[in-house]
Amino acid sequence: MVITIDGPSGVGKSTVSRLVAERLGLAYLDTGATYRAATLAVLETGIDTHDEQAVLEEVNRRAIGYDQRGILLDDESVAVAVRSEDVTANVSTVSAHPAVRTAVVEMQRQWVAFHDSQVVVEGRDIGTVVFPEAPLKIYLTASPSVRAVRRAAETEAGGKSVEDITEALAARDHADSTRKTSPLRPADDALIIDTGNLTVEEVVQVILKRLSGDPNLQ
Image (cartoon, rainbow, N blue to C red; front, side, top):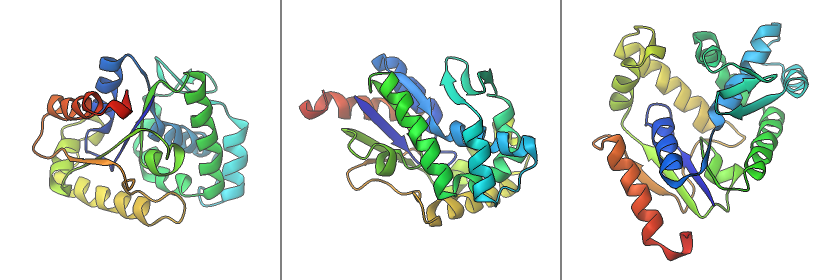
């Protein structure tokens, strides 16, 4: 089965998704990393991130994959490189291009098909666009202040203040939720979980209980 876990930055999607996949013995895909890999490829060549056709051509020229090493670009692990400040600053622009999203979504669907659709997939439009027929859709949320504090504690934050991170998260939220193609929003039938006052394990248990308590999800 395909389990989709969507939500904005800082709600714990990656940690929760990995744990749910591990508990259920399913493969795991971080789709946000696929857009980051596409952004890294574009930045490496100096292409204008606003030039949709040029960006699309570069993305189609490169091989984006995902395995136990994490995200791959031309079969080389770029798990660290895609978390750079430059990639973070440009990923919303690159991922907003409709043609680029179409190309990357196709890659994501092929990856899931290769794993016989026995997967946990996390992202921002997985339950609404990529796998709208998934039997279990989760949408994680939390207040901006909670998310900023969490991000500030991560190595990726690079010592930035909570205030700066709050501002950056707000900008990313606005870009993701207002883009014309695949805006960030919960699917109509998604289980919405506010992670603000829950531990990671508690969030995982909510998801597993929902799965075990509904015979239609078995």
